[in-house]
Image 1 (tube, rainbow, N blue to C red):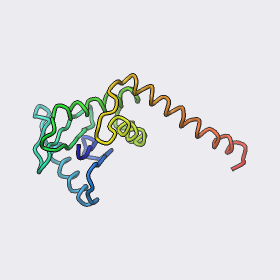
Image 2: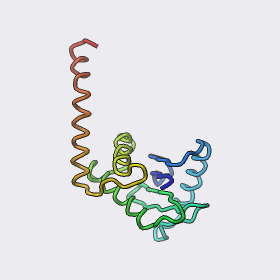
Image 3: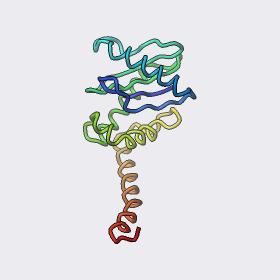
Length: 157
């Protein structure tokens, strides 16, 4: 996988993950061109696009588009399954994920993606195991934040 983009039906970029070194200008150009191309694509058309030197695989879920670019020799159905698994993990964590969940909890969405796809390799496909891991991470985060809030309440900060 070269990169993953998540954008709204209005074309607003919500998440992006790049695995190739490109300048910000190149990323913006690619993102703009891809979003424009995918948004005019009709729903019943194929979810695979040929792009210069890349294969683009995308899937629309509700009002969000999940788009991945992979190399020519990569398998499109596997990339589509990666998208589907990621959306499933977001659904499990957020309880039917929506665009607002991504907007207000983007750091969690990035974290889930990074835990699911580590170094371009899928780490865990079991939603049950993954959710248990996320619960442990959330608990650790709450414990780490707790001493700060106690100090604030006592006025010691």
